[in-house]
Image 1 (cartoon, helix red, strand yellow):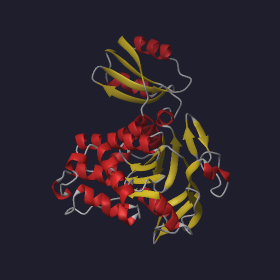
Image 2 (cartoon, rainbow, N blue to C red):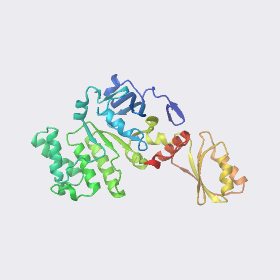
Image 3 (cartoon, rainbow, N blue to C red):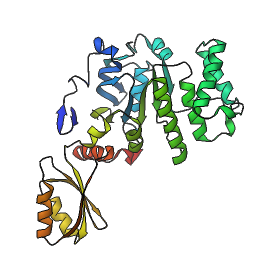
Length: 343
């Protein structure tokens, strides 16, 4: 399927979704893929992914568990070989230049990669040594990162006693120790409580801005993606469904969302509304409805209809479409549930 943004289907081969990985676009993009495919016995984990990730952006790769997100990261790092297709990461081919890619990238996958018996400072020092940073550079970099995530005063503590959220924040610093041009984060807030997740997001935004690093972030958390990401791509069963800025995805069908409140909104009225051609989606609320209108629909026509069937309108208020609204529309078109349904 092509990409559908703001009511328009964009084929995967169109510029911006699958540029030639070996062409000049590599100077503008941290990641380029064309037709990237990976098969495992009995299953196609990734199916013809064509994608471009601009340098300096925070890019969200959204999908359920099993959608192909982690497989994509492993292919881009050269940890897996593609069955078909090609990719470039920072201008390098993951098949032939995987060592160079991993030297230039930071990675945080399922586990934080920390030694819990060591202190925060010792953990970062270890990874700085692995990256072959000179001692003076290494020590300065450790202080810089720990200051930025407000953990410098706890640098001497073994991380075994830290909360999961604190360890995850340290793990992001660990991925940045060698000043990478690109970092891969796989579900960085999964399993964290809301406060810890917010701390991780704040650290990530601050670090990404100051480090001027490209971030490739996988998640099924739509609210998180909307807060963090400049662009997102939505995948299901290894196939790209849509790609664009979060607000573009929110306007997937080009329609507007309107909240109508008043007296007389009942099941019969909701059924009548759902049959009208200008209504794309309808959601019952306590004293009204939330509707998404087709692109050419007029709110005044809808209000006139509701008054005619006996509804007393008290409020008509436009509602900004969210990333979740767009994803729900995309998934409804596909006849499937939400991202969170199986996560």
